[in-house]
Image 1 (cartoon, one colour):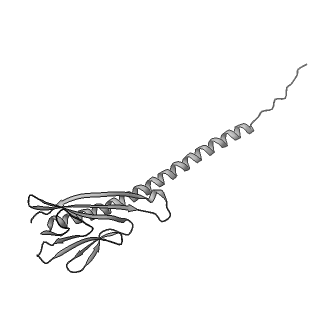
Image 2 (cartoon, helix red, strand yellow; image 1 turned 90 degrees about the vertical axis):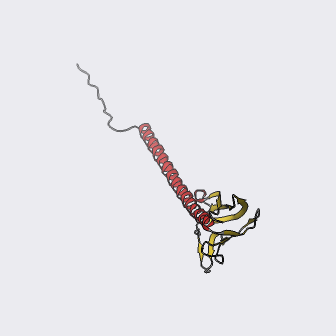
Image 3 (tube, helix red, strand yellow; image 1 turned 180 degrees about the horizontal axis):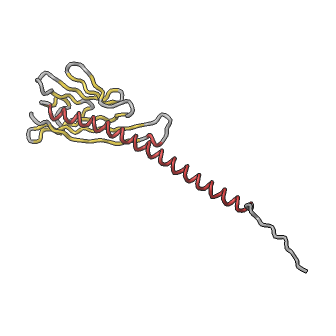
Length: 174
């Protein structure tokens, strides 16, 4: 006599296998979400820094170019610091160019009375200073410094950035 054994063939998953697969899937998804979130924050921070630095560099370039092309420095006086820079323009002795900080922006005012804002309202300019270093080789030198800050009203850290800029420029012809 022959005995037959009933063998059941399991074709499904056990509870432990299902829990293992679900756990691995959740770990992979959470890791991916965290990675994507970090990438988005890094992208925002990079754009914020780029915006602030581009504006600060542009403003600094305009100021230094105007100093180099001016005839003389009217204010600040020799070896003094001021929050306003007044230059004698290149065209004539009566033309003036004024740089100052108005409403947290760097502003240039020309003799015609026209004012131009050199920075946007996306960044905050503070501690704008012009120091007249005096004459070096018969050329007045001005040290320019200001602080650039970006800030998100919602206090999100990736939108906050702060940096101090300094540069020195000398008048070419005096």
